[in-house]
Amino acid sequence: MGNGKFGGHFYPGLYIFLYGLYQATVVFKAMRANDSPTYLSSLPKNQKSTSKVWKIAFGGWLKIVTGSLLTFYVVFCLDDGMELINKETPPRFMYPQEWQHLTMFILLTLDGCVDVMSKNMLRQRCVALERGSMALGIYVLLLLLLSHVQVSSRVELYVHSLLILVVFLLMLVLTAELWAAGSFRLQLIKNFLFLMMGSWLMNTAFILFRPVSGYPWKDEDVMFATTFFCWHVIINALCLLGVYSLSSSWYHCYSPSLRLMGSKEALYHESSSGTFYRLLQDAEQQDKGDQALLPSKSSPIDRA
Picture: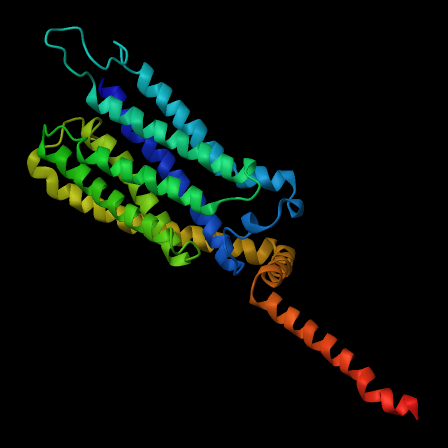
């Protein structure tokens, strides 16, 4: 049972941390290219190869695979099996924390299905659907976490309270992102909170179930949990800075042709759907009007 609870915190935390790193690289590359991370998704499908489409859907498939593996892990980690209600009199609900873990992992799998459907199956990618699905999953996660802690010790309650704080801030950012999808600042804050959520989940697994010292934490050690949480803030901020430095170096050293191609495609996309395209149309109409006036001005000379 202890091993199952350790895995229920460590492995999801590891996935969330790696997901935050992956999203950080995507955002930083887009920032260096002075482009939006969702730019390629708005182009018509006839301008994108099949390989690029499947590359964009990588995150969705990763959610599906990870959510499925974690679901099977929760189901089979219990020796007695996942029972909802026992056969005693009166009957009682069994394994409340494990059922909450199972609900979280099923939500992760469904979120991945929404991503794959939006990026690979719909005629045009629906970014609002993807962001809404992720925000809904965080809403449900926050509700589950509020009742997830069985108050057996002050340490367990406190470390989960810090996790709830991170999830609450992430919920606010995802909600704001529904109306400001192209904001790089919100995306950076979101990736930082994903890193915080993942790293703190992994640390929580060691604090509660596998302490480094080999002895369980006592209630008077709560202050050290706050200290460790602050260290996570600093380390994850430095991690984001490192990812930004590596992405910037890669962009300047290894992709000069991609910069030129990206700028041309961005100009084409902007001219075909934005203000620049309307200005071109107005200029063409003005040229046609000037050409229509030329015969009327030269007609008396022709008659003479």
